[in-house]
Length: 394
Ligand SMILES: Cc1cc2nc3c(=O)[nH]c(=O)nc-3n(C[C@H](O)[C@H](O)[C@H](O)COP(=O)(O)OP(=O)(O)OC[C@H]3O[C@@H](n4cnc5c(N)ncnc54)[C@H](O)[C@@H]3O)c2cc1C
Image 1 (cartoon, rainbow, N blue to C red):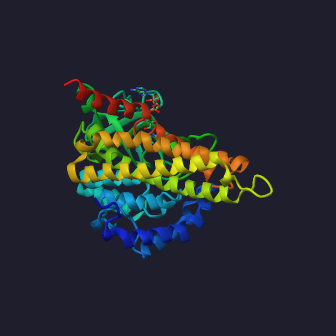
Image 2 (cartoon, rainbow, N blue to C red):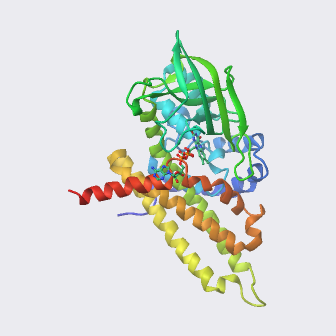
């Protein structure tokens, strides 16, 4: 078994790594001190000019068309900066929306929304979770789309619609078939955000930081929003099926991005402990507690990477259903590794760790959601345990 990245992708990985270190990390102020999309436009243009745009975007749409394993490796490098994915056109939620528009979009939908999305000319959001209902069981959904002539009229209340602020359109999950079995009740419908009745109530503060633009999470009211039925994405009642397809590769993308974050945090931590004196002569690096954490974290990051690449390889070669267990394993495991590492790095930095003078506090606040979105830890653990225990009952 060869654990090296495939030869075909090595030069690209080197190029991406250099671009992130030389251009993206120095531009992070555009996020860390209030997201400034305009300030990042020249950097996105440079990324395109250097042939690095859209690692996961199909070639016919102007991207690099990488497979899941290759993109996972790129994604890790992009994850070394909180703006890496955005600069390269690989950011959530657009990446997931792009995938489902590519697979299910009509010719008209592709021309109007997919093509400009792939070029980074507009942004989008995905509106499924509701404050009044459990997001971890979205079959309990209140948002409804009723037919009226050739239109749908949508009424509902959503929140945690990431990046709604400034998005050109939302893909909304709404109940279209209330009498169908639970997983056949909802459809995905594209709603341009300038449609009458679409109301972005606020960007929700995350531990005090409401963010803006792409770096925000919106609360939205849909009040009698009227769109043509031709804006439905995919078949009626197929909302959950399409959502599952969106989440499978999405979890690999998130996990590899988290490993990139881990590497950045690990570097920051090792650099700090080797410089910070704790008496006249010795640095923090001479203390066993720091050494133990460094060894443990190295082991956990390396284990995470192998697990995620294995899950990506399984999806690519054997299909998603063969990888279901591995995907649930990595979703909770890697999120946990990342959060523990960030916390330990903050601890070793002392007071500096909770300031905004390093990237650590940003990660602590804005990555905590990793253990909640795309399935909370508890749900994934339950999925894994049930499947394992089933094998013992036969
Ligand atoms: C940063 C971030 C970004 C997000 N972006 C989007 C987005 O773009 N679009 C969108 O539609 N949504 C988004 N979400 C919402 C996300 O999908 C939901 O938060 C998630 O599905 C959990 O739903 P909930 O918050 O309603 O929690 P609930 O479903 O109320 O669950 C609360 C807690 O209960 C526990 N729990 C739940 N079910 C079980 C169970 N079966 N067994 C044991 N324990 C359980 C878990 O600890 C869970 O955290 C985002 C969330 C975050 C944090």
